[in-house]
Length: 488
Image: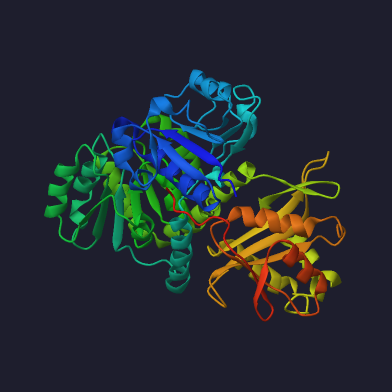
């Protein structure tokens, strides 16, 4: 298997902040899982600021255009139309990440995961791009999806817990020392509360904040923590800015006070507050103290924030961004691709599950009730160890689902992704099952895929054998990883 090549061009550190590099490192990780070889073109400061990027092969920024690649990802306000056109002239497929439709683009794919953003807003500035717009596409690292599930279990068990641990995080650089301002405004709450302070190693005011933390009983300072998702998930309330970390807090359902620290963040922060996922507070010590005390005392408001934030960001944005980059597959009379199963698809999948042909070779012969299916479907979409997709066909009327494929991670009989596929009842004998197997294997080429087939299902035995699956124990087939090399 030939590996596709991707180059990420971004910057981080200083007044730029770390948000661009953090979301690019999340994309790099998902691309690697899907079999891509990823390199990064970034300055010395940016390369040192984000450990995940530092683990990738590095290019000099000026060499990025000349380096062969199947995909180039550009993320930064300094990369204008002229830079995009250089990559286009070099024959590169271009994915551009932006935060507002205020400048022209010459991209194949444009990603803007701002809350409330629509593709139509880019029609005049990126008329030829496939636009991925809105908070559904927020590219969060997989650790946040796992921490989300774990935190939700605690939330359901404890209702809304009392505030004990408070996250204070204003990005990796925090050039205006909002961390210090907040700690000063809330110092009277220590030691009753534990302030969990997070900063980057290049933060301008790191040493002065370190001194403040040392004076606050019980306070903790974490510099570039290796498990940011777990650290955040262990907190009960947060104070932060309105940048990319807002989406991490929403995904976890972490109640938040958002400070307006820059006017370009105000529209997004106001939309976030309007959704119910955060309270806003102006950059004023007295206002910060008052709003914090009010939110700490209002468990009902915090519970509503938890649910609103989780509803906004489900942590599956990386897969939504990845799928347009994946190749489609031929069937007998057309082509098919994958899209994620969404909440809106529950009824459609229930109809398919109830069809006699679907049940014929299912592990459970009985069709699920509506209530059973609804509970199962909610668990399916939330489980970080399950990847559910529809197989969709391109038609003149737009894409339509013609089957599904699901990958579930399991430890037995051997570790691997168990695959489940089904063709829509009115689309049999079109080659959709074989296409589904090929599409799924392209998602996780570095890991084994398992299939369980009932003895009497002769058609499926033939399908899996033809796709390269080999029997390894009774009723089970295994497709070996097609890629085994390291990230480098």
